Image (tube, rainbow, N blue to C red):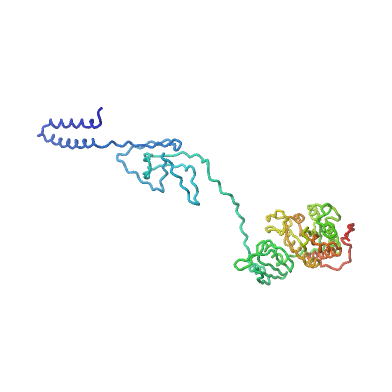
Length: 486
């Protein structure tokens, strides 16, 4: 079998034989000999050149890359040009059949790369592969487009959803607030590590201290929604407390001054709902509240008021019906009378007066009920009047019970107050579980004093033109009572 070297040497011998037969004196032939000699050298050198390398194209598995219909290839250039180097940052990724590299662990805070990269198109020659690749890159293609990759079957779980927190309330510096509201005095003192502030106006005096919910208006205790805080050396108050508590008290609340107001008096409990039981004589709360309400009704009727009772006997009455009764008669004011109990604890004692909690503030008392500060009830339209009336009632009742003050408080769960379209309060006249207070509550003369204190406060709260005037005595409650308590 003739090899490639033999095939290349046969024309060389033919040329040499022709040169030998030529006339050595012929100039043309001599020139030809020179050309032939050079040609022989070239052909002889070609015989020793290695075979040109056959281009190798890497076969990429079909499941990894599927080539689209290629565009017609351009005719190869006469002279090969070097492949331009594409910067690493701009170079598209090169896919080969080489084993997949070890996945790179992302730096903290960087997202994990997706399982399949987004489709791309290569329109420029591929760059020279980095050292260490097992195979050279495939030849340049005029246009290479890859189909969209399949949707990844696994992905990182979404981060937990945290609802946006409501904007924090901007607390108010008390000294600047007092100056803006025309307070006549502002004094500060430090006691036991707490800062005490005393504010005065033409309507009364207010005292509060940092870190405490307890404040005092003209010496009567009431509860704030948020305890004042010290910041930058100044005491700060919550803006809702400022709007719902401090402003109505210091600025003053106009009193209606109605000549003949209508009041609904609600004796707490009744019928099957007996309420708390006295630790002294085993009397029930429903009995004491009804007697107290009747005595109060008689005092107000004697002064020209219209006073109605939600129940005049020992009957069961739903809380919603008590609200509806006041609405039906278009009452100007609503008051619910109760007595407290902490049994089996016999030490608790004192008076409490409750108003509905203003929206935006936490309640002083919840008794296990959900306390949603975003709720706004019809009675919240009278937050300022409720606070003013509650403080007047609490101050008047303290004159009777010996100043056992548990303060004016707020509760949101009191159904009998929520739906009232008028000022409304609830009074706790003492503890039936406390032996000393239970003994006083069982005394009819003491309940008469409680009724007189409430009447004085209500008339004072209604306006100066309705000041309590001496009147002929009336039967307690203005109605016939069959309830025997003395």
